[in-house]
Image (cartoon, rainbow over all chains, first blue to last red):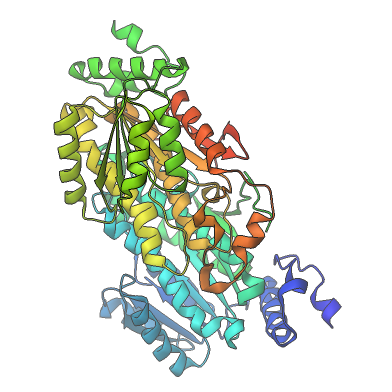
Length: 296
Length: 296
């Protein structure tokens, strides 16, 4: 069985499992592979428990609606501000899925995140997927941009490892982080935002490579320019380009619905290390260039 | 003269100067070109005023020593902890350069950074180069890593724009940010640190492209694995690899002296948008891959 487990699995990069996995972890590892292999199935999301941070946002809301078409078991939406009418709308979309809202600000100390997650795990017993989608776009607000877009995402991710990490007896899990194409190549007029998204892309790529140790697979979905309220008007750094939003929207974009459709397709592909580029209604897995190799 | 100014300058990407520069800014722009054109000269650093954040660090100290061989006018070292014996040593190295130390923690509010910079500008009248080198490597400390490595660097950069930005009547300036090769491709065992460095790389690339607006050119120096006290022992994220430091040091590395020599060579090249890779005593300007283009 060990040899079977250590065969290369196309959708996962578990080449070092032989060296790192202790015997008791192999069952967990087997489960992860089994889960990853569901990816081809259209029913991949069926009966899953999903936490969606910022699931009421512009891209978030349409993605939540798209997710609800897949007969999830639970969709737990964590967002900074409750919007009861939207939550009601979501609850009515699919009676097979229980939709819950809980208030959550990703900038709280990590201990608070762990408390909230404990409540959710106590209730649901297991969580299959965490979608980290909190983000702001306002380069007048340096601290807030970095605190929400990067620190908040890292803290929420780190917090859930208490429950997922196979080294702690957890079952593993799937992490879907919302990056941005600006993490690949910046919108130079918003360097603080773009930098924070580059951090998310780089961070998540590492987590994917650590999946053989933690049992947690990871990928990013990186929307291109999407017609959201976020993008309709935003501040550039030091006002280097006051019309940045207007200029950006002169070029081809995508609707939030198109983005949401690609988003859920990416989740269904469930590719550890996926670097999904969601642009103008298309979905592409980007191959990151290797500039150097730490060899470890 | 306008036509002459708007000719392409090889070491700068000022292609849009014609569209953005108001007439009163053209003299400033001319100064920037003149400064950039010094880059071929070995005396580029001679008589310059340089602020070096973290100039007493492991790479910082050897780089400060290397800088002092170039007959700067002033070297103002800002660091969190005063190390009087090291400052004395630096002061004695070259009587032509006035070395000053001032305490500075990059995590202070931006208003504090501006106050400190005002003191320096009041004293020196002009500052030619700011080197942003504060960094920590400890993935147990998520908030501190991001606050120092990314937010602190952005805040210090933003603060100096009050004095440099040509739109505010400033003379322009040169920004040298210390990134890391982990900003290109992570050391996966320290994803928080690596992500913060990806942010620095992405942020600085944007600033370089904004130089035609702000008058401030920018580049990163990105050391490969360098034998510093930082690297001798550090914590991996959630202890995914307790021996990460030892493993890393089993592969080819460079000394801080080798790194410092390349560092100052990069400064002398003064290439706006430079993405300098400093590894095993060599210096290379990396070409970043274009994954998409915002077209603005």
